[in-house]
Every structure is written in structure tokens, then in C-alpha cells.
Length: 155
Ligand code: ADP
Image (cartoon, rainbow, N blue to C red):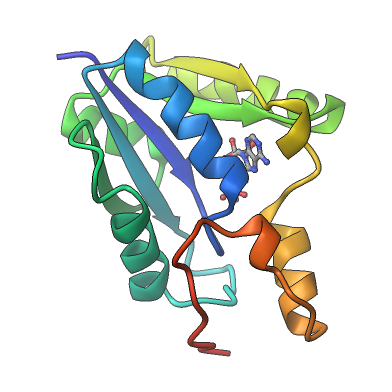
């Protein structure tokens, strides 16, 4: 079984995430969208809310499941038997950051391979950070959110 983990904060999920995962589905038997929980980090939306949105968005995709994990991504991948990580690249700063992380994961994960997909041009300006800023500023984040996502602010 060829399993890929797509790890992230998904605070909140955006149309950029969805586009990336859907393009990855044909490449793997299973894609696990996994919310990494970092107790040092504060989030705009709580874990349960973020996971519920992910479950809703991918409800019709039998090859996609949703989970959460604490600790190192590489350890989580080993635990569930995933040999691949999926990450998206939007620009050169994503590349610089992701390159180092993927090299570390290859060592810590004993051969864990990171597969990168470059975002489509229409999505490369979209990030959860920007969406959070729009929401905090009282703007309409609708164009960046998957259909059906509505807000129940937790912070
Ligand atoms: P993290 O906190 O780990 O960066 P994110 O939820 O922000 O988690 O992102 C998870 C993954 O989704 C990252 O690999 C990121 O590059 C990718 N990603 C986020 N937004 C987009 C987008 N608009 N297009 C393509 N990939 C994206």
C-alpha cells in the first residue's frame, strides 16, 4: 500500500490545499491529511474544527483520510506505515524551507521520501496565514475557502 501523509496546520484549510491533495490522489493508494499538533503554537481554529472541515471537504474521496498527530512527522509516518510525505511549493521561500525539512525527514524517517507538487499559478498566492489575516480583519475569506466552509470562531 503506497501511503502519503500530507501534514500541515490547516488553520484553516484553503482551496490551495484542496487543489494539491486532489492532484496527489492518483499517485498514491491512500493520502492521509494529518493535522500536526504543536503545543507551543497557537491556532486561530481549534483542532476539532480544523479536522471537521477536512473531513467535510474530503468526504467524497475514498482514498483520502483525515487524522492528527503530535511529535515528529517522520515518527507519525513510521507509525502508520507511510513511506511518502506530500508537500506543496508555492515560491522560492517554500522551497528553501521545505528542502531542509525534507532532508531531515529523509534521515529521521529512514528513507521517508517527500514528494513536492508545485502549486498551480491560480493558487500560489493563497496561504492559511493570509486567510487568517483576512478573517481577523473582518474581510471575506470566502474566495480562498473550499465550498461549504463556514466559520465558528474559537479565538
Ligand atoms: P504548515 O504549517 O506545515 O506550513 P500549512 O497548512 O500552512 O502547514 O500547509 C501545509 C502544506 O500545504 C505545505 O506543504 C504548504 O506548502 C502547502 N500549501 C499551502 N497552501 C498552498 C497552496 N496555495 N498551493 C499549494 N500548496 C499549498
